[in-house]
Image (tube, rainbow, N blue to C red; front, side):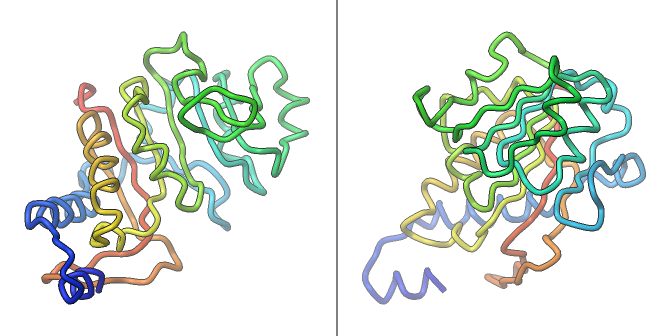
Length: 228
């Protein structure tokens, strides 16, 4: 484990940081049982790309931001069919030709990465649908890149009623060189949103530390606290 190695090398780790990491790990695996039977699964259930949304909230979502375009866009098309505005962001890996033609007035494709600045190859999260202040959904599944997005203090996550994110590398919450950044990212997210559902990724490995067993990759559904 990182902590054992760090201690042997004389690297200082704050007990407070370890406690925070364990707290967040527990929170990520807690969910509101009342939502278990109130979820609508959207996407292709046969591959990675299917996500749950509270049934009562589906019709309330008016716009969606989805960084990382994959082989399937079933999730995004579901909201396009409902008349939502959808922004898909990716450095032209899988341009959604079919969706772009069918939903030309609703779909915005941005061939950039989410980043700190607005530049030729980056765009800030706040710069996408800047006129939208509520009723949004943010869906993030970008193979580890989510920590960069969640860690940007400038991002206004309060715009999103729903945040769906696949968190990779939870073991890094015990990594002395990354623990501060990871805690900052989770602190920002938990400040405005609450976990109502989570499940381990199908192919993840598990870790045990101080009596807590947790997956390295977890899919989480956050709902804005002010909606409770």
